[in-house]
Image (cartoon, rainbow, N blue to C red):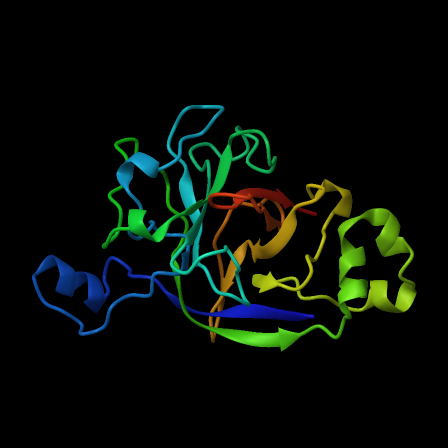
Length: 241
């Protein structure tokens, strides 16, 4: 099964030439990539910024990813997937639960995507370190489609045999392929399509930087449910050791 890993570079930092150019009217001559992990969303209408279903405060961006027919099929060119979670008081709201309301994942149509970074809400949600996606690397985990389909319940995983179960799977951020479960595969929503997973750290060329609060060495998982009309529904949840 094919899967795709992101090529990342750090987002703008307070002392960077990119930010100084913005502040003082200059330009770097290079547009920032739209796809990203952490930081702030790009082009999201302010009325679409999600709020926590538990504490009522604004959520923080986890990822912004664009439709791709192979890598991230969302049913239409230009659609954008956004994933958020509550970062105001980590551990207080149940951000790990796909139905708690303390996280949000959704797809936005291209007509609703604007330009420029979205201004943060007044309650200033704490932002995770930003990583911009400059490309994707296609990889193959060696599994057949039938074998890959077994990785979504504990019962069918156990029936695969030790050789396949014990083989090291990709535990970092990737789209497609299969999830690297930390706890139970049975947490996956039945009948939903696996989109990818997000690790709790950014892997740059020369360093690994802690990024998202997914507990102890956690991974977040994204699943979609296609609709007969309209955009797919998306759920996010995370597991940790």
